[in-house]
Length: 162
Image (cartoon, rainbow, N blue to C red; front, side, top):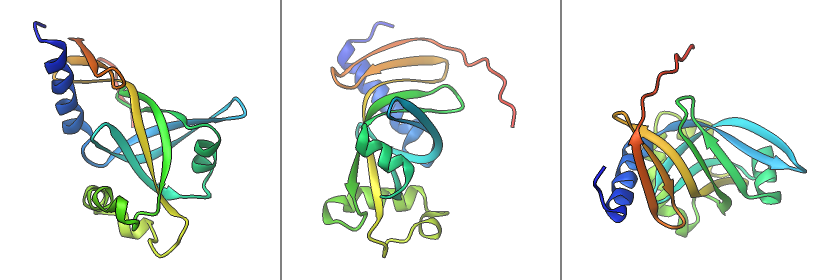
């Protein structure tokens, strides 16, 4: 493609927002004591990070506190690596914007699955370092740290069985 790196990076962010600026399920991989753990989570993409709501004493948060380096992978081969942080309770004033976005994105289940009266309810932010995703038969490999992207033809040809 004849696109300047800056504009290609911006284009990749638009695609990323289009694909994942909504309730999306990913497998979240964490590691503790050199032992990997994987579980499915609902995430929402916003401004260079994925966000999820969970419980501060859950295994995933304990793992993240011990080792913040995580990976996210979807059943359609989208994959990301980044650094996860517990940014605290959803009702903290500094979390108001992302909480509003999560309530909207997860509207079917947000209040059914989460008790905001519980002080252990928390938000996890995964600041992205690198990722691969695709749309309309174009693959994007993105370096979020250096703000660069490459694009290439990509055809998803794996049969997904439910």
